[in-house]
Image (tube, rainbow, N blue to C red; front, side):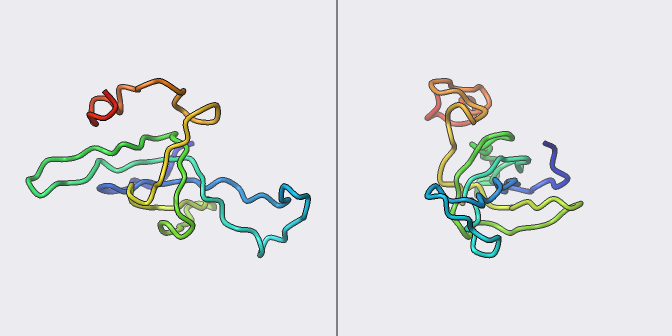
Length: 120
């Protein structure tokens, strides 16, 4: 999925997951009562955060990562009928690792390891 938004600095563009209309208990929730999903897929990322000394700190999050974020994180925008949420990387509380993520468990993708020492 390609975004028509190019975020700047340490911002990312997320396509939220669809809200579930039926709860696990089987109760049907009308659209106005549904909670906004707090998970989504990253569709675009900025270049990174500019530090005080002028160096650029690249983002840890990459396109196609599945992420978890706060309920009120970011700003929702609509572009060509698609709704996206633009937020700072710091609004993300975790990256989902596993079968529904772009990164398999136990791997250390080069896009992360080169930028962040904790992945080496």
